[in-house]
Length: 174
Image (tube, rainbow, N blue to C red; front, side, top):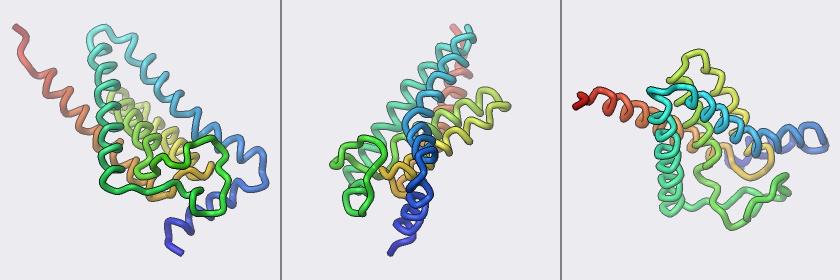
């Protein structure tokens, strides 16, 4: 058994038989991503100078994260763990959809990176992103490696987005 499957089974066993843990896992896996998106949108709405650029960064950068993940999955397709393992997922996910890398983890860490760069006190957005990522394993739809890859993609694109914003903000105004 691979380390990935071992960790996956260990996380799944934590939620087995506990309705409360299963509910918390479902909320983390499916709902918290929307909390991050809404938090981000409301955080930039009040900024008249930088708000529109930061909102555009979310849309463009988030789209790039998703497109990059699609490209990776074309190159390296990995089926969902519940397809091969004896696990019933706690959320409804298409069995033929890709598992690697995790789009939810990538987008959650992308948004967390942006939030933490705009306001240093919002470092705890990473904790919310981590709950999203762990929730995806706990509900049975991702292996831990899918999550780690998604985290790396999200952080990398977050960094690239911030650097691009800095580059464009240095341009002289005509």
